Image 1: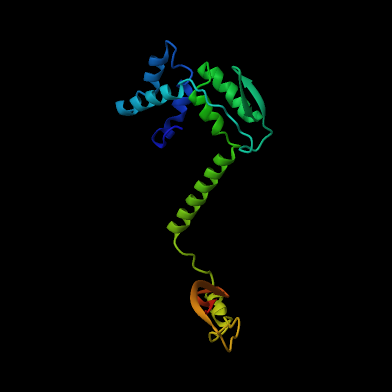
Image 2 (image 1 turned 180 degrees about the vertical axis):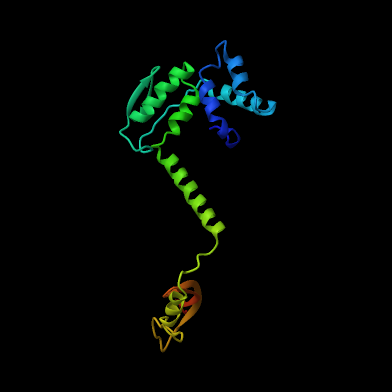
Length: 203
């Protein structure tokens, strides 16, 4: 997958990916990247070469995309593609002239891929959360809302012991086990400890 540093230049990569082995590659590349520093030009050229490398990966999209996946034959290999992936695959073959790493990555990063959707939804949630944090806490429009909520709260109740069993007399050894639990009451949470006995019959 193209690194984050080069995401801003995906347009150049898309324009150049079919020209890597053509005579006009150098001239076209130089004109498209004239405003970029030499280091960035070098990275772009290396990325184009990486994407143009022949690929032998099988593609199996069963259970990974929102579409009807069917067997697809290419060069004596059977891939499992939906219609969207098949279109991307065939366009990639036309651009690169063969099945390359760039074709594989384009197919695996299609918009209907569940993994891609999940990543985009996660990025959107993170973006929205950061925007909300930058805005700061939301202040209610009317102070009466806060006052009403305060007056309607139930008065605090004293803690109550919950007893699960009563044993008057024992003739066994006892091992005490404590388990940490969280008790929820309305919107409040309390940490507590249970008390449990594991008995062993005495000899």
